[in-house]
Length: 461
Image: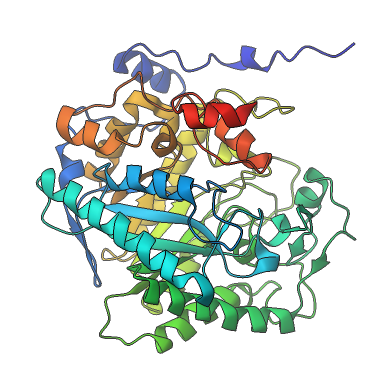
């Protein structure tokens, strides 16, 4: 007889009727989360060395798996990004776009190539035009920023729609969790990494030619670049071992080579979404205390992430997007939720504790790094109609510069307009962290909100 899942008894699902109830729970849990009901600070522009960002809200990169088979934006891709363009967000971070065919996690993942650059030109032009029109209507003077995230799926790559992991090293925690043996796929060699570096730089140039303002070299959530950052046990390699400079070599080489390729007078810039902490015990994790332990999540130690960020700064990076965890492994560290995907259990940890960890990580990093390095924070969607209040408080307290929303953008793409015009989010339109968008993603289907958008309700079946 199947054992009944009583995991919801550990904590109540999100049921806060008002902000006072939420604050009461935060106090009970002894967490450091503050909320501002005055959200005008979200309208304030911010400047970097390269660009002026109209306001403090960003659409986070969320894969829709709705590209055509040649990697071009499909009908549903255009639909989603036009909704984002009409949202009022000053920054749209376009989802993970594969740098190579063997680095795809889905056949319908975006992929920028010489053969389809015209389609990407049209995509960028349409999104930019609508976004700037929306911003102007809301009273913003600066133009929108469009960033393309370039990624290699690494250990989550697929070949002929079957898992074919391309690992930086054998990580027993992740290998066992994905039911893949160490023999599945292969460990990427130094020679392969050198070839991939050049391919990646070429994609950066293509992104510039397509009209994007910048490129994100994705370094989070268990994918290849992040896998290399964790690769202490990678042997006989100049891309691994105890040396952080070796483990960061791939990421830094791409940035250095791309910077040399692009003229310094151009406003085009490089950035990265960094997973500053994953909770996996040493020596397999990143951003953790260097002590072997069976504890999960492992205690946080941001020494290495801060060293990496300083190296990025030395190489001209002035904008970073922070996140945590590996959603393929322990998703609560990345995106706290009320309901898990099919076949999984709720974690023992209260979602507000998970939120608090992301906030603590982000604020500690922001407090130490150079002042002119702009930080985008994550993890707000769990808070539903109160997410904008946390975002405003964090910006006022200088714990973050820009607040990024991912799942909320799936569910409620007009969330920036609601905050700018009404000062609050419509509780009847927010993300309810049901994990059904994640379920669609795991099943390789077109991905969106099955609760708020009838288009994806059909995909659920």
